[in-house]
Image (cartoon, rainbow, N blue to C red):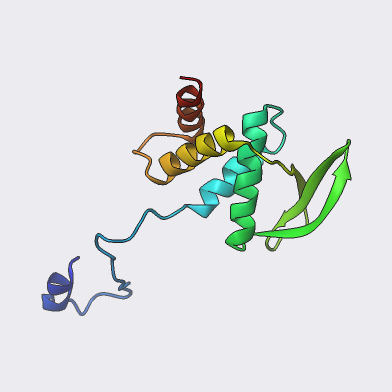
Amino acid sequence: MCSPCFEGRESPDDLVWWRTLHAGQGKGPKLDIQAVLGFLAVLADDPRPERKDLAFLLALLGVRHRKLRLVGVARSGGREVLRLKKVRSRKEFEIEVREPDAEARASLTRALTGFMDAEEGEDWESLLSEAQEEKTI
């Protein structure tokens, strides 16, 4: 309910109610960090280079938002990896450290921006594919 409607009603039978404020226009897109972590779990073992780049970016976002903890940096199979774990979890996983070139960074930026501004029903796979197609055109 809007504030005037909520304030104007009289209902002594209510047991519980929740009141919050809704921010109007003016704020930028907000990242759904739980969706990011879910997608990161899918990407963790994907061998495609563009997916490894995206996984690395999402891992950094997770650490930045304090939803992932950096356990350490190690070498595995001749490559450098971040050893990470979710907050309140004991299970660790590894994400390869990547240094995407300018084209790859632009593609990742488009995919991430698209995800943050996604229409209902769009998913990461389609957004990343569209970003990859733009890169090759």
